[in-house]
Length: 210
Image (cartoon, rainbow, N blue to C red; front, top):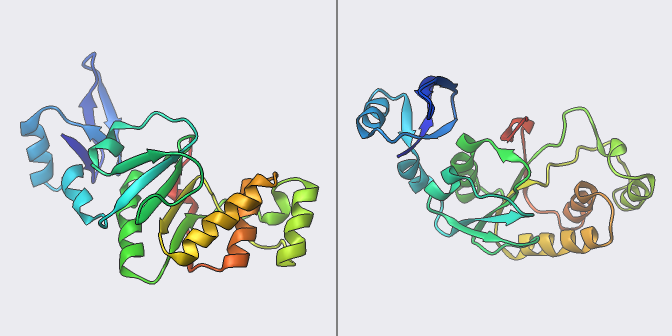
């Protein structure tokens, strides 16, 4: 049974050594009695039960080659691979080269489903702005459109999107800008400026530091 921990706990590895896991970690607990006790003591939640909070039609689009982690499969959501697009009513565009903070997935999709936000994406940095991203030529192209590069950019490796006419246009525009070459994050900034979706900036912590 896959559990998401609500507090730190030690579990034995295959050699019997106790390994410390932390809040938000997802772990496969094969001992059903132990799993039931952790849930009863509110030290963990069943990932399958928690996934019921996900909106209908939610799926994950994995961009770039990646091994699908077991905890993601345990959520029992649709999974596709491919380039920029919105194959599901609610799509997580995930670059498999980064690790999302697992405990935030359900919460973020709940926000999209219950509020007016259409897109949610983590900030790239609290300090580095568009002035420090991409090549000189790429920044010049971006500035010509948005006029000022003293603006934040986003981690396009992890984007939560509710599909509608505007967000489909955002994806089309972003792909067109990306196909021109240059920095993907700046391409997304240009696309967002042109399409103007209701975009919710998420904290940097939505992506786990490695």
